[in-house]
Amino acid sequence: MARNSSTDDPLAPLTLAVGQEDLLLDRAVQQVVAAARASDADTDVRDLASDALQPGTLAELTSPSLFAERKVVIVRNAHDLSADTIKDVKSYLASPAEEITLVLLHAGGAKGKGLLDAARKAGAREVACPKMTKAADRLSFVRSEFRATGRSATPGAMQALVDAIGSDLRELASACRQLVADVEGTIDEAVVARYYTGRAEASSFNVADRAVEGRTAEALEALRWSMSTGVAAVLITSALAQGVRAIGKLASAPRGARPGDLARDLGMPPWKIDRVRQQMRGWSADGVAMALQAVAEADAGVKGGGDDPEYALEKAVVAVARAARLNRET
Image 1 (cartoon, helix red, strand yellow):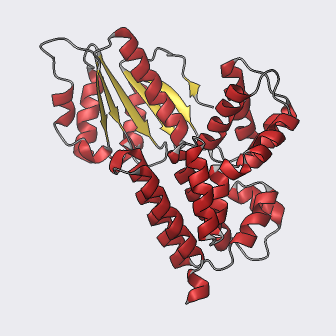
Image 2 (tube, rainbow, N blue to C red):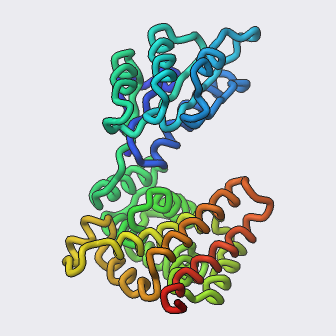
């Protein structure tokens, strides 16, 4: 769960989101944008990748406006900024403009540490967005998701959800929202079990499981059923990516490692280690690379880069299933 510094005003001149957990980084950005638009519905939001912020760009973006509009400038992967651009940012931090909120997303490592230190010295509002590698952290995240909705879930239900979903925070957050929307009263372990059993054929994970097992026809059938029942396309690409990455991680793990050690090191519950081992048959390193590329293209397609999200997903499912059989066919 993201933790804010003592300066907790989303409209502070500078927000520094530090970490590598994409969901938490996105939420930090969304909180600032929502606060800005609540203050001024016409807020101008500029969301930039690090390579789009060239020397001089920040000065242009933060120069006084004729209409004195509020502005939010978001810089992603700020640790990748060039040395000259970092000088510009440091200069700006010394005298930030009024009605402008600068949001820097930084991985938090040694790269770009000078900018990180300068932002903290300037009194940035800091939001910690650490990668959640421990099961206990993910359990805490699920607890906070239910608490935020004002709903109650038993410890067993929350553990069952973490065990079922795994390490993907977006999937965990989505599962929490769906349970809250669909289930009345306290959410317990039996509810979680019934929910996922009843929707197995319509889940993004079922699509991914069939695809990584090389079962093209079944994967496409599960995909069409999922789309018809309202499963978000982005959840399906996320499940496909998670399934392929799990195979890549386990394939590169030391041979002979104990399941418990693998579960800890790879961030998967033990039951998933066993499942991925079965799914690995037929996969090769080339197959993993090909599948990840196909999923990345589909992800771009469903997020606005293509005209037909369903077609993009079908292509990805077929490509993943073909990659699963690559080693057997060569």
